[in-house]
Structures are given as C-alpha cells and as structure tokens.
Length: 518
Image (tube, rainbow, N blue to C red; front, top):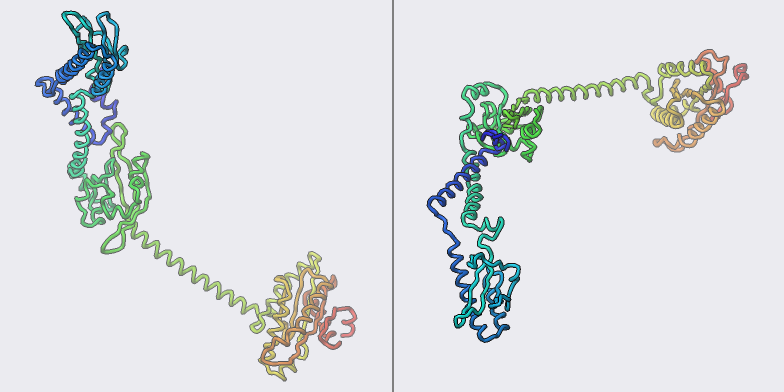
C-alpha cells in the first residue's frame, strides 16, 4: 500500500520539527539534487579513473624495467629488496609477484597469493596488471602487480568518490548554514501577522496581562496591559524569547525550563496560581498571579501556551493593611490581658506583701475545704504572727516595719508549694493552708519556716542593724467535727496565741485543752 507525501511526513513526524530545521532540510535536498542533475547532464565533476590508470601504468612500467635488469643478472636478493621499496613507495600497491615462464612464482612481496586475481582473458585491469618480459623473442617472465580498488570498497569507497564527498560537504555544511540563517531570520519575522487584528483588539480590552508564546517560548502576542507593565516594550516584544525581556526575566526563575508556561507545555497540563512581581520604574512592583494553558495542534502536539497575569497588587495591599490591623489588635489584646492580670492581682493580692488578701483567700479556701471534707483528704491550717511587731514599728519606724513584713512574707512563700495558700490575714498576722498535708508534716513545715525567719529575717533589714525578728506559729488539722473553714482557722489562731503565751518564737499544735483554756 502506497503512502502519500503528507502521510509519510506524518509518519516521520517531520511536522513537529521547528520551521527553520524543516526549511533547511528542504533547501539541502534541492541543492544536492541540482548538483546530481548537473553532473549527470553536463559532467561537471571529473572522472578519476583515467588518472588512476595513467599512474598505475607508469608504476607498472618502472617496476618491470627494474625486474628485467635484475633478472638478467640473476640477483634475486637485490630484486626482492627493490620490490619491497616499490611497495613501500606506493600506498595503493598491495603486492608484487614475478612468475617465470613455467608459471611459478620466483619472487613476491606483500601477500601476493591473497591479493592477486588473474585478469580475465589475460587482459590487465586497474586492480590487477600483468607486464610480460621478453628476451630474444622468448618469454622471460611476467610481472604481476595487485593494486587497491579505485573505489576502496564499501562505504569508504562510496564516500571516496568526488560526487559523494561533495554531496556530503554541501549537505552538512548547507544544513548548518541554512538552519543558522533561517533561525535568525524567522526570529525577526513579524509574528503578529498570524494573529488577526480583531483578536489582538479583544485581548487589549482585558484588565489582565495576556501573553501568547510558541513552543519555543517566544512571544507571539502581548496585550496592552502587559505591554504597559513592561513600559516601552510595545510591539518590540513580538518574536522575542521571554528571557530576553529584562523585566520578565527578573520576575521569573533563572532556569528557562522552570518558567510556568514551559512546564505547562512539557507536562501538557494547565498551571495556576504562580506568583511573580514585575518591577516598575515609577512605582511599586506589579504583583501578579500567573495562569497558563497549553495550546495543542490537530495531532495533539504542543503548539504554544496562553498566559494570563492577574494583578493582585490591590489585594496584597489590603492584605498587608489587614495584617497590620490584626497585629495591632493582638497587641491591644495582649496589653488588655496584662492590664486585666494586673487588676486581678491588685484585686486578690495584698499590695505590700504580695500575699492573697482575705477575700481571695477565703474563695480558694472554701474550695479546698469542701474537697478535703468530701474526699477525706488531710488539710492543715497554720496561723503565724510576727513577735513584738508593734515595738518594731515604735523603735524603727513604719518603713522598717513594712520592710520586715515583706521579708517575712517572702520567707513564708519560699517554703510553700504552688497549691498552698498564703494570706496576709491582718496586720502582722499570716494564714497558711496546706492541702494533703497531715499534722506531722505541717509541724515540720512550720518549724522550718520559724527557723528561717529567726535566722534570716533580721539580717534582711539593711536599713537597721542588730534587729531580731521572730514569729510564733499555731497549727490546726481538719477533723470530722470541724464544720466550716472559719472554725479551722479559729483553732489555728488559738494555737498561735498559746505559742505567744508560752514565750513566743515557737510552734504549737491545737488541742482540745486549748479551747478549754480560752
């Protein structure tokens, strides 16, 4: 079944080649065809066979003369040496043989038995030449010379012919020159001629930048919006590779293959949402999102790509303003939270010592008290009072007294857990609540706090020397007969006053007898 020329081209996929390559192949084919026709009709190329014939005939005669002279002397050794020299001088000469009248080889150089083929009918050829030697009308010997074939044999022989060599040179050289020239010419041809004016006008009405590129990434169309962003490029864009447009090159990746439209054509899929900034000389850069859709031909081959540049500069500006507003709101929120925390601290803490005030203390105490009663967990209360605090105020002043209160409160809080409660109960009196602590543990804690105050509180008052600060402690344990938190505090307070009556600076545990004494 025969194929049409168009079918052959489709089979070979020549229509997918770049235009410059296809045109170059056609021109080279025409050039070589014209050369072959001229040689066939006018014989413009020389025939090398007569020249080879003359050269080989002259070589054969020279060798025959030397052989005739040396055969008369009978010096076969010298004859062999001269034949080797003749073989070395002529690269086309394969072998030389001297055959006597009886048909036997008397001297041979080279692989004469392999290369020598007797010519048909005894007539010499260009490859096998026989020179008969006569002496006194009798046949003395035959000189046989085997030469290389003039065409060299195989593809070497073919390309050794002038017509083949010239065709190869013209074909390769012409293809390179034609392709380079046409590539440059086609690059500067006006591609806008293939875009109808009505299509260009329609694209110019778009607020988005629109660009159409061919399969090699050259710009075939750019609407007025995109040309405006590129400032002054105008129709000079058409036919240029995108990477040759400075502002587009600066906005895109360094590798041309990484351009969105090149990836879209390579993967044969649309690409959306690529980000690029096109710099401007008289204002901020135009921030765009790039969408690409490949264009296919009738054979589903990639013919180009349509590219849109959506201007999101205003959206970016609004987003930045929104982010600034959010940051300001977050800063205001943080400031409000800090202020609220300060208000909570002021509302729940004693301003001098930082301990819980009585209102906040009782709110937390009721929770701990109810949990302890419901779960039958131990709960201890410690009341402590600074010994002779009034005399400290009278002797050293209220400023020193306030300092002593701060030092004692720090000593008390440093020995407690986060879940323990410390309250400035009134004046120089403090109340401590210890959840999940039994009476023995509470006694050890109270004794440790008492010793620390005695050892370090007086030394912490820098403004006055030789001041002695001590505290008395009273402890009460939550028992089943304690109905409310105030009763537990009252028992600890009774134990505190028992410590004061017993000489101060000591720890006393509440007992029923203390109630009877009170």
